Length: 309
Image (cartoon, rainbow, N blue to C red; front, side, top):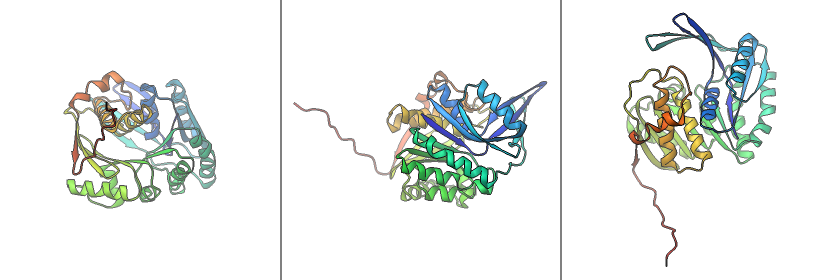
């Protein structure tokens, strides 16, 4: 079972012409939605408060996303997404504050959930300063119970998350640059950053940049991923679909080369839609053959351990 942790969920009000409807957002919730479509059992854990939180709870029930939440006194954040001619414009309302007591309760429930999962992914931003230590705390719990920890976050707390050494990390290029005040323009910059992450004890790292090539490291081996050429509609949630693909591959005991292509294919399929993380296996499969994976620098030796006569 996979645990997805979303500390900063979002209620999306989508307006498409005369039609208005609500969707549950937040990166971990997106990952849970995609994992459901891939047939991977998961549990979404989050904060929810106010009327917005009530609406999100109903949406999650309707979508059959299993979840647990910590109630908070403040209203869960919201956004208005206006859709015109297959393009989305978004207005985000301010984050809600969570207080220290709510954070402590969230953390107190986290250990048992991590103990009962095979892997935990911490996705998205944090709602307020009081919540900044939740992800490093959760990574330590995963270490304690020998579980895979995955981080896909941004903000001033990213440095502490890296120092906690999750098993796997995903960064969007622009978010990493802003969060860590670094430059990742050249290929050398990107590979040096992957080496830095490995020096911190992170085993698998992924650095994506929209339609541009992505870079990855497995221990100290480097890879470049060329994405398929598509007519992008909306890339929102593509990083979450990508991470769901990584998790899918790990749960299915696939080799690195295979699940990286699945992850990239899910990201590409997602970018063709106005919705987030509603991609089927059939839609993903259409892109597998158009994704190219290149080894950069030293290559991993393949040992032939087949029986000999």
